[in-house]
Amino acid sequence: MLFKNAKRLTTMLGLFCFIALGTGAAARADTFTFSGTPPGGSGPISATAIITQSGSLLTVTLTNNTANIQDVSQAITDFSFHINGVTLTATTGFTGSGQGINVGAGGVVTQVGGSSAADLITGAGGWTLTSTGPGSFHLDALGSGQPQFAILGPPNGAGVYANANGSIAGNAPHNPFVQQTATFSFTVTGLQAGATFSNVTMSFGTVPGSDLPPGGQIPEPASMLLLGTGLLGTAAGIRRRRKK
Image (cartoon, rainbow, N blue to C red; front, side, top):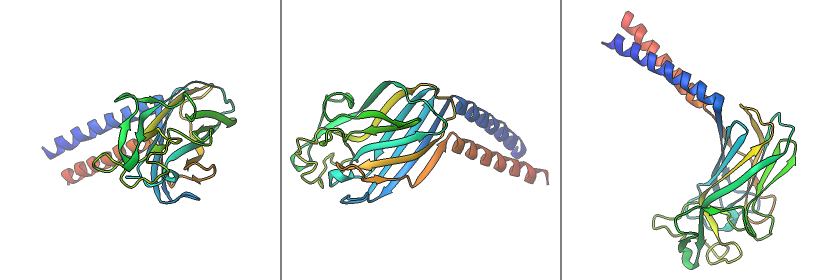
């Protein structure tokens, strides 16, 4: 019975690795983590960025994990990266979405547009996409000098930013914000499958240059494949013990 189960496990995990490899040919996702206190910032941050490629389409998901944020200097306002091996800079179809919120006095939250996602790239103070050189791209909310749709972390358990100071709570020039996660998508002309990324930087607050490099990078589906091959090794070990 043990041998049969190990054989079945080996077959299933082989299929898992095959699927992971097949999926990797169609889409790739790289996760970058950020932590520490940005230059000029008033407190520590924790954030992630996921860059997903599907053909020539890139989707960038920015998430602020800093709970019950205190100051706008801890909000995400900028993200830049370089696509290795890309010499073209033309892009089309730029879109951005996230849950827009107004943070009022006392940190009380009201949603922008009800439960629907807010458009983050229209109107004054929204996010923009620019190319800073061949293969280099910059998502930015600082163009107006009074950024709107800066990305805050999650509120407290009661849904309130109880620790927010006057740079967030009731601050009309900076409202609305984005609650925790914003997603941006655009197509890069000439982008080939399997792209890799470098020069990744996330910025915080309302002053340019308050940047942090990533503290770590997790490529996908490579980590899925690593998990699958590790489990295959476990199954092989079970079979060897059964034969002894």
